[in-house]
Amino acid sequence: MVETAKHYDELWVPSNFIKNSLARSKSHTPTIVMPIGFPDKYFHVSHPDVKRTIYQLPNFTPLSISTTVFMFLCVFDFNSAMDRKNPIGVVKAFKEAFDPNRSDGDVITKNAILVLKAGPWNIHFNQERLDLVKCIDVDPRIFFIEASLKDDDLDKLFLRADSYVSLHRSEGFGLNILQALARGKATIATNYGGCTDFFDDPLTQKVHHLIPYTLVPIVSNYKYNPYLIENATWAEPDMKAAVNAMRKVINQDFRDMTYFQMLKTVSNNLKQSFGSSALGNKMMDRLYQAPWKEKVMNSMSANERKVIELNMNYVGDHIYRNP
Figure 1 (cartoon, rainbow, N blue to C red):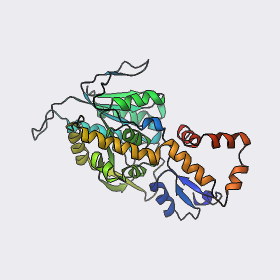
Figure 2 (figure 1 turned 180 degrees about the vertical axis):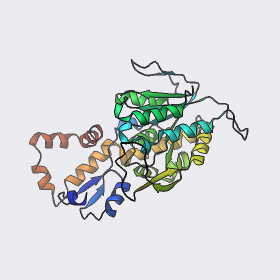
Figure 3 (figure 1 turned 120 degrees about the horizontal axis):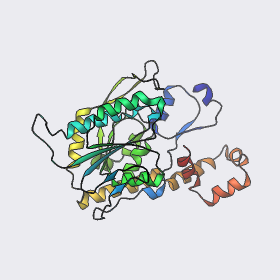
Figure 4 (figure 1 turned 90 degrees about the horizontal axis):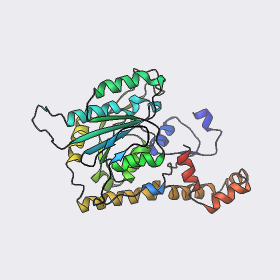
């Protein structure tokens, strides 16, 4: 990485987590944090009095989610290394949180479901899929969706959710976590990785739930894990804390207007830092700075310069669509 970086004038990375990782590699190339611009339209929190419709996946999947159950959502991709995304951890936490036979007798009777959304099945990740399905163990409260969804169809899934859960072991940025926060969903996430940039505001930490962790050596039972590097570590989330957070969230009064206003404020604040318009402007400001403004402009065609100058959020949206 250090050898490659020296050929660039400047490195843009999406999070402080990645910037700090590069700093430890002793790279001398200037590096600044330039988050991935997320579409502005998703930074909107629906009023609690808005009647939710039954969610039904488009066309091919006969899954219908009613409005009477509390829905936890976890979105991941096998291509991103399942043991890093850790959906199995989410399944285990959900089962323990809502075990009808809890030894302490503290059973939550409110109906809860967990929806896991992954991309289409890929034969290269057959063992990972088998392990996840085994962990689910035909639990009728857990739904496993394997499908590619258009952005707006995926957003409908976020809109239907009551809470988003990511018990990841590492994240470079965390787009799904950002989308959940933007949509005002009670978010439970490991306090590690690039996503911690979203929780800098004390208000965000007040209404959402960061899960503590322990750094552990990276191990994997799967063929695909590009993170298996000597002496490398990642986060093992505290399962007890995750269980407690899920139990706390399901008892939250989402119709409480004070709580709603806090969720809305968090979403609006995040838009100023991570929305595509704000990021497009930040990118343009940086590109036009000396000493290499002339170099940047000369590398663009006249049409590219015109497009960017007329539409300042073009850059942010383009980066989101083509990460």
